[in-house]
Length: 305
Image (tube, rainbow, N blue to C red; front, side, top):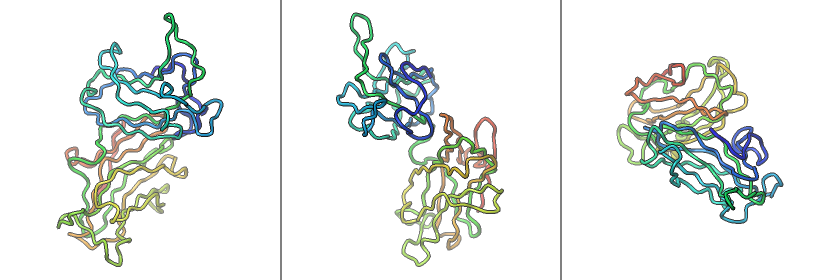
């Protein structure tokens, strides 16, 4: 990524994790990616901020629209640019998470993205813009996943243990865990139902856990109650500091259920996002065997009935 008028620091505070891309230069302020292959991509997400609520000197509050930040894309090497999103100066004084579905025109193998703040050119020279509010970006991620699951998912309907567990992962630089989950369904079909009113309904939650001792003990990151997940939802959790090490197991586990034909659930599109603008992705599509954890090295995922 090419930066002008920017650097890596915390002058606008912490947006998502540690330092962010901060733009406070007196002339051009922009970040431009190299040409990206976005064929098959679905979304772009990032954390952004323009100025600050407490009006810090290094990140002062914006007062007009020209201090906003524009997100553009180009498919012709930067000759022409098309607006994708405007970061409104009034809405970004607090840290804001953007999730943008990519339009069809961006899905080429020569797409570059640009975040920039408007400036004034006088006599061919960029006029100093010290009065403009400073801004920052963090955890930029382009993904090939829709906001909710599609295609095949991991489906749990067995009469014994119901869980999905990873092999040991290196979470040293991990930031967030994201996935799509559904428990039962709104229509309560034979193949996807959940008893929401029974005395043990809360025990049929699906837990997200981690272990740092090869599964001897497990620690809960989050629990998901059936009543809240009768429709597929995409959720995101910070990786606990205690889990940011090598050799960590993750598992999704349902402690209690009424056996085959009851309390079914499904899991899809799991991602572990790293702090330095990288990401691991676990693809649970049966079309790819349902057993692979993807990054540069392929690792396997265990599924239980």
